[in-house]
Image (cartoon, one colour):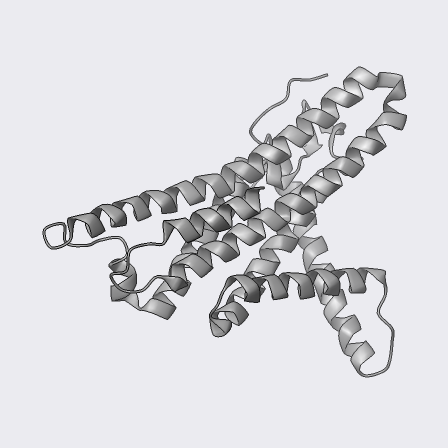
Length: 268
């Protein structure tokens, strides 16, 4: 068994751009997401016109979409913002779920190698991917906060005159720290779970050896369950962060008790 690398491993370069094993599998995951959702939209249109009936994968996508869409409206009180956030948050859910699931395919890992490295590795096990996804999420939260509150009010959430309002100024500093902590939590939670899943499968396959064909399917099922949970947690956290941002107003002190309550409901 080769050593387990935390970072994605470079395979080759295209026009000076290094292609890693996680990028290769990530491309496959994106193709699956786009293809699945496009096929679902086409099937729904045909079913609406009475030309076809929805299949299993179409019904699964619709079931996920309807449940997630309802959750967004439950979390974000502003219905206009909820409708705008829905495409972004639901897309994140599907991307995270598919990228997680492609990481447990039989040909992923050391089953197929390129030189000394595995040819395919889960995109979600690449810290670059999880950090970028977290950055995009935090930026999107700020964009919606500015659209709802305005630039001035959103700025005053973080920067308050310490002479006129020292307590509010300190709260603004805490809010800035909270934004960075949210970014780190989003990135590290997903990366840590995917990497731990990779290690678990490799260790079980190595220790089980000849018995691994009978043992591994149970762990694959477990990983599929965990993948769905992680995708939902990332989706839910992104939605909650938007909801908290648009609820703030002007000089109001951030409602940390409401945030703590929602975060505890997600993580428990």
